[in-house]
Picture 1 (cartoon, rainbow, N blue to C red):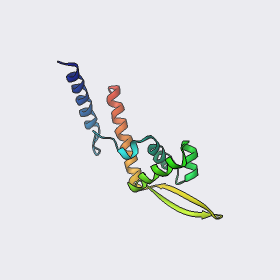
Picture 2: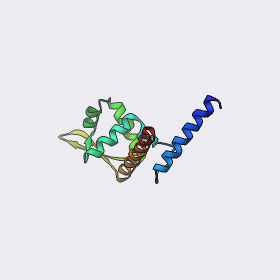
Picture 3: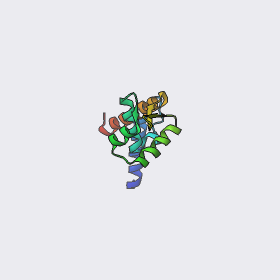
Picture 4: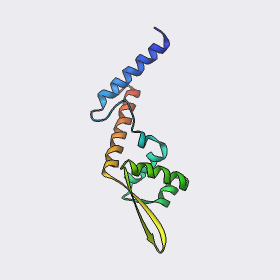
Length: 123
């Protein structure tokens, strides 16, 4: 058997094992909205806090204004987070919260990663 065929068989076996470990999620694809590093950071931070301001997220994740803005917009468009804007002492304030859908999708994403870890460790 050629090396490429053996590698293909191993990958197929691992994916079938992951499929068996996951009941409600598609085992072959990670959530592409959350999977990007900075977006994962945003939803993880919001899962640990009731809400965070733009500045708090930026400083916590060590990202630029443009990066936070672009990735938060993607998450908002997907319905994973919600954004509210207000003024405090005439200074604009943008605040983010994780939605119920965002919380569910993060939980599914983490379940998927745990299944991959189990397969990778042979558990």
